[in-house]
Image (tube, rainbow, N blue to C red; front, side, top):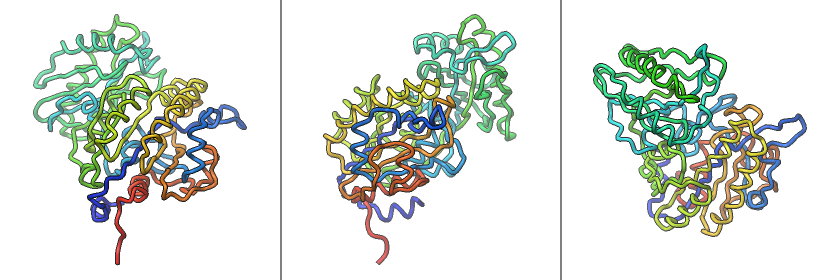
Amino acid sequence: MEFEFIKQLVKPDETTKIVLLVLDGLGGLPVELDGATELEAADTPNLDALAARSICGLQEPIGPGITPGSGPGHLGLFGYDPLKYQIGRGVLSALGIDFDLQEEDVAARGNFCTVDEEGKVVDRRAGRIPSEKNEALCALLRQIQLPGAELFVRTVKEYRLLWVLRGQGLGAEIAATDPQETGVAPLEPKPSSKESEKTVRLVKQFLKEAHEILSDHQPANMVLLRGFSKRPVWPLLSHVYGLRAAAIARYPMYRGVARLVGMQTLGSSDSVEEEFDVLEQHWDDYDFFFVHVKRIDSAGEDGDFERKVARIEEADTQLPRILDLEPDVLVVTGDHSTPSKMRYHSWHPVPVMLWSEHCRPDRVKKFGERTCLTGGLGPRIPAVDLMPLAMAHAGRLKKFGA
């Protein structure tokens, strides 16, 4: 839905509250043909009880068969068409750690990784090294000097890092060096514009020197870069939807995508329980809350079916804390599917439910992939349609036309 159109319908003086609870990587697959998905296998009495009072369905983050990254997956949930509003992970990482990203800076998301003697990637996440180890390695990489540009290397979290190049005449149209798989060598950075050729030369020099510096620092003996990008200027949630919006998220990337659309980021919680503490503490200050639960996705990426089930159950125990706050609308979904069977994001639609006293409940009694397939929202509602639906159920949209 076009922003200029939706802005005309927004009621500016409404004070109703909307909560968007994103269980990252929620969707899954059965390990066996007739088995349950992780969500279906989980004991989720609170999610199931809410589903019985909600309208449910499966939402598609981008389109049929398209596997979304985390950035596009969240932008769709915020009402931004991911095909129109495209951004690299570099900018999101920078904003997520409050880095002062300037207009001409080129930013990239980095992974410390492990390569073998042949230079092939054997672990894209370097054993998920702790952030303290990351900080020490970033300090070493900051010693690298690149001609005609200033280099910034910052710790993000665990194995993730931020890489920023500042200087004149730099382009960000650069292919990633992260092959997104193991058993192969990192990819060569390649420019897709004339403006980016200088940047690519500097990227190659950085990677060469980084490999030399990190060679003895197992398991983090190399760096992968992806999501080269510059900061865009986009419409903000406050301007489009008239919302005072806040984000509660542990991981910097998700804080970054929230800041990009104008949300205030709250706290820096280390657990799901603390995230809900922050929600309670700031309940009176905002109209819209994006609450992000990450570890479900991490378990899926690690291929750990049982741990993903446990993380979903952990989130379920916290759900009553939201309901006790009496929101006007509560949407529960994920930004994408991460089946532990696949160990990565997938194209499968994601379960979603929307509760409001004005919703039209369907016949779904348990929150899961197969049950949501029959829900009132339908089997493939576009993610971008959820925000207007939430606004409508919160009484924040006027009638269209005479």
